[in-house]
Image (cartoon, rainbow, N blue to C red; front, side, top):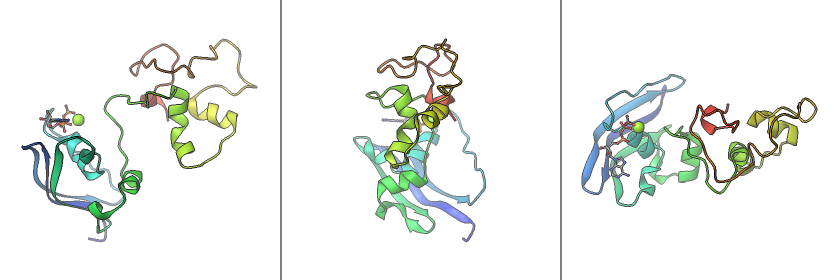
Length: 164
Ligand SMILES: Nc1ncnc2c1ncn2[C@@H]1O[C@H](COP(=O)(O)OP(=O)(O)OP(=O)(O)O)[C@@H](O)[C@H]1O
Ligand SMILES: [Mg+2]
């Protein structure tokens, strides 16, 4: 068990009465990449959302079985701390709607009280520093709110799906 960082025991996930993950027992090794594969709708996303306790945020969604992170029962841990250790990348860009794209990209630093200079923030978001900026980019391109474009657009917005 030393090399197992995460494991599930008879894990089931339900939407109402619908059991979409059925008694899954799986182990994930430390410092290894594990791929979960299967046809659309088989429950890959639900499995990850169950493991990091996002599943329980959906109305009517429940689980049975156990999840252990480093042998600690995830159900007794603070869910915010669980999600810090078990992050996930959403299938579609999922920015906080009340923030600009710039603020979305920087949000993780702010929430963790990591202070950054404006140039550091620009570098993380992918905007040239003020000294190097040539002046052709619209100042509002990444600070406008409420307009989001899918990854791969050519609008000049920094999409979370394409940011580092
Ligand atoms: N919020 C929800 N309410 C009810 N049923 C849901 C909900 N989200 C997912 N489901 C159902 O749970 C099952 C598993 O869905 P899930 O999204 O986990 O599949 P997936 O393997 O990630 O699919 P894909 O490859 O398309 O991303 C599907 O039958 C889906 O319709
Ligand atoms: Mg999915």
